[in-house]
Length: 161
Image (cartoon, rainbow, N blue to C red):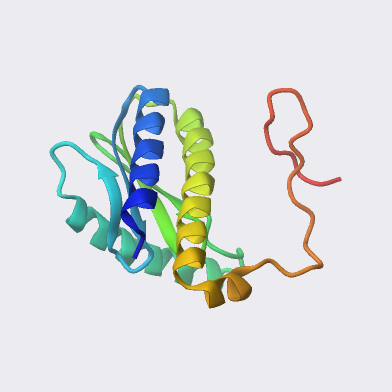
């Protein structure tokens, strides 16, 4: 799905993410249909997690649709020993993070969202180069909805006013 060079860029992003979030124990990027794009998941079967992520994504999308909550953004599951967080990474991929129970969940979300956006850009750029007709289909429309502002100190997104 993603050429080798872009897969390496995605893996680099996963490794930088793991360095920024100390209690992150694993990270993987996968296509929305469950194929591993890149992973840094010591001791965890990446293919199995990617397949389960695709299944959970399907349920999450149906739930957001059924409750009129809009498009899928993220999913957080907490178990006795930690968290599994999944973030949208563009229209074709997802980012799944594994974290220890003591992780700062706010930091996990902040870094996961940023990394998901970056990985989504990498994947879409690779797919656009692979199939030029895809760029026309995935290009945003000319009239766009307002995007969150990031002009406040710290660069945190703010709702449009």
